Length: 393
Image (cartoon, rainbow, N blue to C red; front, side):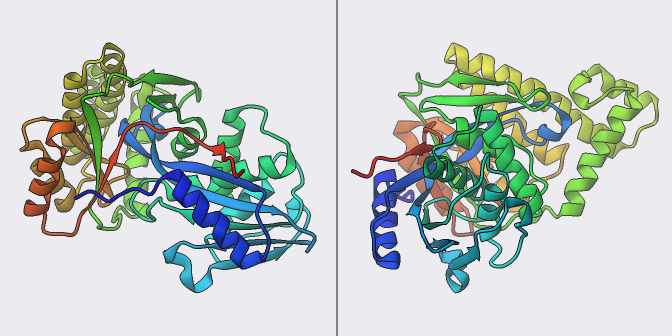
């Protein structure tokens, strides 16, 4: 069956108990921030297109309080950092903070460095139900939870949610060395229960898209448990190919291109690879726009069809799928009641997301288990709420 997602309250209690055990006093602040899944709009972000993520009910929780030790002390209970679960560094001017060991703490350091004001000494414990390496944005959940914790600690909040998300993105760029887009941080900050978030990656404008008519449907996120194999060089090759295509079309980005421009590229003797990459981006941007229209009409059948088309395009034109992901998708689609299934994230590993009727959930999971040679992990989700301060009284 599906993995039982611990409730936010369970994770909160674990963090509070761990803090009391580690620091011999009670925390007076507790916050959380969620992971996410992108429903549609893949490899469109760096082409100034649209993405449509939703927040998941899996979260990173931070419990803590101010300290008189003149140090920032953070303990992570993540199993992936068991060997170096404690991070301790002196309170210094934010300009003097530098990345270092342990690597997981760099996400915290970066948020301190780019916080809106100076940060006092504190003790904190981090507990998370967001799996690491699954493509469900454990890094953004940690960053946004940290920033939310610092807001509660100092009483100073970012002027706008966008500022908070951009500061967290900058932390990941400069302290973790990951040149990520801004989708993950935006949805972790702005997630809303029963809504997906449409993000325009050109102007960073957002729109909450209602999904409250999902009573009979649910999303099944399936972790292939195969690590992402899309190397930075392969990623850059695809990105640069898109940039070069836009240049050939005399456009700022492929956001400004239409499907008619595919024939223009052909007439310019563009490579077949460039044509395929461009076709995916152009059609994926349009699919994301169409998906929003479908959701606003409550047309989940159309939305599922667009998810299927998205995966097929990622597989055939962008070539970022994998045998494991294709198996999960094709197997899910064999079940009557599955409306759509696609890989989510950069590709070559990670997760698929499937829209299906609630009544066929168990059948779908059992069918996938019987056909998938690996050890898949399943999460059942509807759009969840974003970062917030938790009540500990």
